[in-house]
Image 1 (cartoon, rainbow, N blue to C red):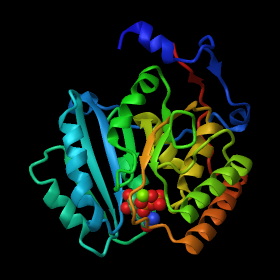
Image 2: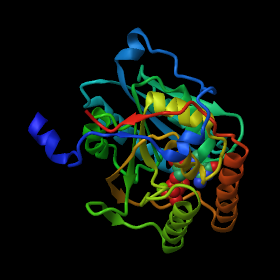
Image 3: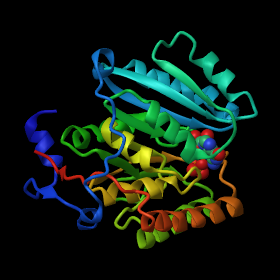
Length: 293
Ligand SMILES: Nc1nc2c(ncn2[C@@H]2O[C@H](COP(=O)(O)OP(=O)(O)O)[C@@H](O)[C@H]2O)c(=O)[nH]1
Ligand SMILES: [Mg+2]
């Protein structure tokens, strides 16, 4: 992409420094655990892909080979991390089999099931790439959509997230009605209670700079389905600019979300975010994000 093409997709506004006013309340004296400065091989590793996986034997037989095909076609160094979330169906063994002979793939195993948020956190903190993408094990959004993220990531946005709700998104197969409604309701509530201005809080396709991933996931504590809201809440409080990018979505049947249990948990999660904020649990070094240069 040449400079003119890049310019055409960047925001029209002049480059600005953005300071989240609420972030000013945060004390500069406390710093978050910083990412260790990457060296050598790690410095050359451009991308880490993190996949949380819970009882996914019925789906990863198709999705891991598809993901590998995409990754093998990349002309930059990358790694793949599958984080097994205490599966009882042999998911880690199957993942290891599918990844045998892949030098840059790892399977991390959690001893018990704790929820998607926990699995994503483990992967994000273990990742060594300059940018870290997490996506769902069913690849409802195809990894090819990452190509739409690069111009934003390369221009300085550190939190770039997929949206199924923006103009330009292509939902070729919807989630079941109850599941889609749950996501929409949760996004609405999150906008009101925690992180305003996000069109799709729960889309399982989000990419962070390594530094942002280390900071945000070190501070986050929620293990369940509401972890996205917490991470976005902290990101906004710390002044990270969040860029939403329309993505494609072809829903793969077999959601692991349970209607009542996960709805209650998600609501409790939003309450937890507010409570943690009041308790200054998300205190961190004040941050000023440059929009782009
Ligand atoms: N629902 C759920 N998903 C988990 C859990 N741990 C990891 N995951 C992964 O999180 C992703 C959630 O996707 P999915 O079950 O398709 O839910 P969807 O959001 O309804 O599409 C998948 O990669 C799961 O394997 C868990 O405890 N519950
Ligand atoms: Mg799914």
